[in-house]
Structures are given as C-alpha cells and as structure tokens.
Image (cartoon, rainbow, N blue to C red; front, side, top):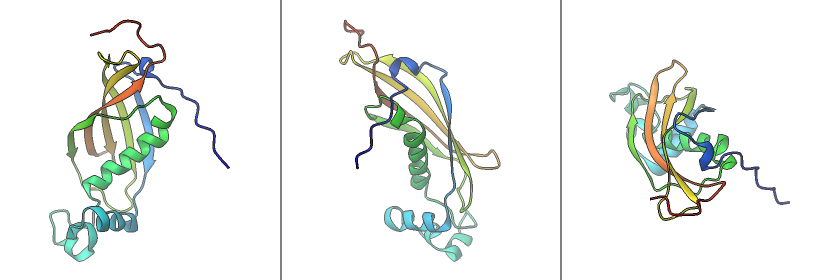
Amino acid sequence: MTQSPPTLRYYWEDLHVGFQRDLGTISPSREDIIAFASQFDPQPFHLDDEAAKASVFGALCASGWHTCSMAMRLMVTNFLRESSSLGSPGLEGIKWLKPVFPGDTLRLQHTVLESRPMSKRPDVGLVRTQWEMFNQHGDKVLHMEGYGMFRRREPATTQTE
C-alpha cells in the first residue's frame, strides 16, 4: 500500500529571517550510541564504558556525527517533509559543545538567519539556517549553520540577481 505524500506547508516565501521552530526531542540509548559508533565513528569512548571513563568525557558518549544525525532526523520528521525542500548545498560552523550521554533528552531549535532567491533558478530560494540542540538541562550540545534550497510557491518571472 502506498502512502500519499504529506501536504506541503512551507515554501521559500514562508521562511523569512527570524522564522523559528522547535523541532521536537530525541533520546539516544546506550545501544543507539554504540551501534552508530560501531559503524561510523569507532573511537573507544563511543564504544566501551571503561575506555570512556578514562577519556576526557568520563562516560560513554555519542559521536558528534551521531548528534548531527539525530538533529537531521528531527529536522526531516518535524519540518522538511512538510516543506518544499530541494536539499542542501552544505553545512558550516558545526560545533559539538557538550557530550551527549545515553538517556539524554535532546531538543532541536531551528532559526532562519538569511533568505534570498537563487539568481539562476527563479523557482528556488536559498535559506541559511541555524540549528541548536539542547539537552534536558538546557545546555547547548550542538550548534550548526547551513543552507537549504526550497521551491518557491510563486516563482519569480525575472532573474532576481
């Protein structure tokens, strides 16, 4: 049985500077952290409790790449699948500010920093976004910025730039 695509609620025109959304929460388990690290970042402090105790982190913690992946999951589930997203040309300024431990509850906040039409694609707008992820104590664990391309609800009739 095929699923019908979600209704698009957000186009480039809706993503003005200052647009902000809380994109939900996620809680990695010990098993999640080890499974991700085993495949993608097999450093001892992501895989083994004893090695992690002896590390600067003091306990088993998630890979920063796992934290980014969890942020992406929340972004897709709670925003992008309802948007006219056309993908991203890249991220910048990724900072892992605090370790993420098993059982932490992570909350993602998304803020539009810049929005402009694309010069060579009158049907597409470019949006620069800040993603901030906080743990259950309110500590910021992740900060990153990046660009997204979104279909325009009303394509420009002339080149903008």
